[in-house]
Image (cartoon, rainbow, N blue to C red):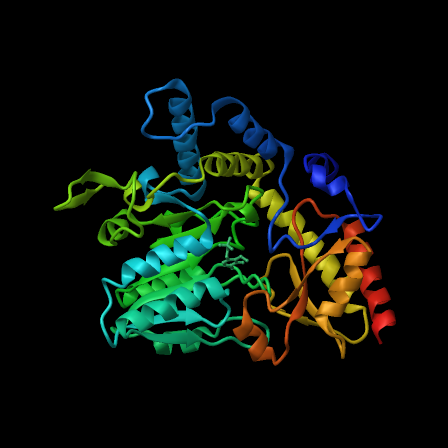
Length: 404
Ligand code: PMP
């Protein structure tokens, strides 16, 4: 049995009220909540060993450095990277993608092709468009079907010797679709190109093995994985990280600086200019410990039960349409009530203490595909319950009555 009652007690925020009603937090796709085990680590850092890392001889600095590097090793082990220096600490998925896009500017030439999927978050579209502007490379798009799945036959047609890079998310934040990344990576490697996988939405639900996937770059954000905001990671194969130029210049990323010439530090420091989010990095490690103590397999099994229960109940509401109907999906339900704007539904649900997201979810191309302005998105985590699903369903029914 999944220890849901025990788990819920780990999250102080879950016992608060919103508009006088118990909070039903179903916006986990935007950010997850933080367990006390991670909050304690943050308090401990600022209470006991807050110091800058890597360059101090004093005790606090050494303690902070050890904990920060320990976190890097936890991340390495979690994602099964071969080397700890293949884990670059960043401010999140967005920065990780920008770092790689910036680096590829020196590797691409006019007429090269890079491939994105129709299911991407804006943060896995815009940096590549900027890269195309800089280099004259051409952006191609893997199309999607009505169920919100990628059309792989079309992907096969896009691949050629001109392809240099493919970037696709592991799981769509707007629809919950799990993309066939293993197959995409294999096919892409056959033409000699690299693959970046945006794992922002996948990592709260499953445990990617970067070596088994043979992926070139994998990126994630701590705040979707029960960690704090403003910290994340980039995994890159050593050979690729050596090939890419530094992203930002500054302290920490250098070997030697003179006014004539600067040489860069080895990996991972080459990509980590300036004082990082030290506390955030350490807390990211604690969040990974927390998820692993429950077990990602247990989490995904429990969430799948929640998804099936919620989908069945929600579909009983007349005039409600779910977007993203792939069998291969995680615990996200994106929907609209016929003739009612998603924003209005979200506002009424909030009055009942129910937190959902409304809008385009930073995926305007998906909304354009369905010809809608946005959806209401309920995204479930392992600390949500069937009772909360029932509250949501009743809330939607009420909203429908009020707005029809
Ligand atoms: N990609 C996906 C699939 C996401 O869901 C998100 C966050 N909504 C991002 C990228 C961007 O993540 P961050 O804002 O943490 O950088």
